[in-house]
Length: 255
Image 1 (cartoon, rainbow, N blue to C red):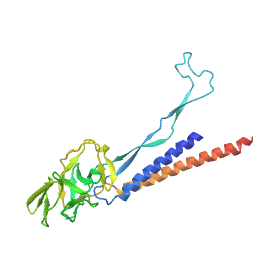
Image 2 (image 1 turned 90 degrees about the vertical axis):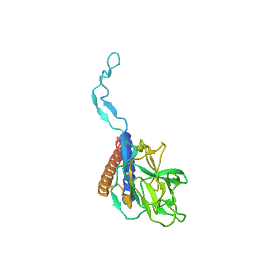
Image 3 (image 1 turned 120 degrees about the vertical axis):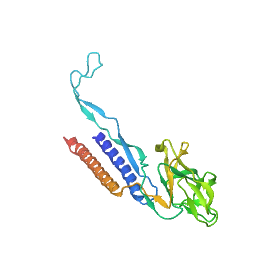
Image 4 (image 1 turned 45 degrees about the vertical axis):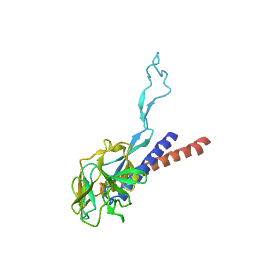
């Protein structure tokens, strides 16, 4: 009975973690360049169940268990990892010359107080000093460092990420990718930290457009309802085990 409580409690904790992940996905449905997460679970090791109190529990040499095998007992579930789905989201035109989207795998490089970080969110603006920055004010990096846009002339950015101001070349955006994107760590503000060296990306830059989130709100709502139902099922298991323990302690003990 106690084992049943622990198994049900592991189910409650797992569904709580899955609900948090789904809720975060839904909260970022309209966040440009956001990539949804998935909660991945794994089962605790199963236990073999044998019939007890048989006259011969093992072979004469003790190497084979002769007790009849009944089956296996699950011992619960745990969160294994939170995996990010890097599949592309739909690209929407905005006609804003500083809105940029990436067609293909890759990330923009930005400079933050914590170091270089990476993002798919291309909703950039020009700050008071003329630097190209993110919505949070982080510098967007080019091959020559933070990109500075001179004057108020028209800005043109081609598919290779080359920036032109009034027809004059300014810089080329740093667009990179990673050999193993699964190791990227989300840090908030739609930024990723990397513990590996970036490599040049072959993705194309689209000016005047933004990549939308790859979250499917209908699918995530279905997943949320499924998580709630699984949580309720684990609650009922906890309640049933608690009632059984209550009877064992307060009623059977009287006999």
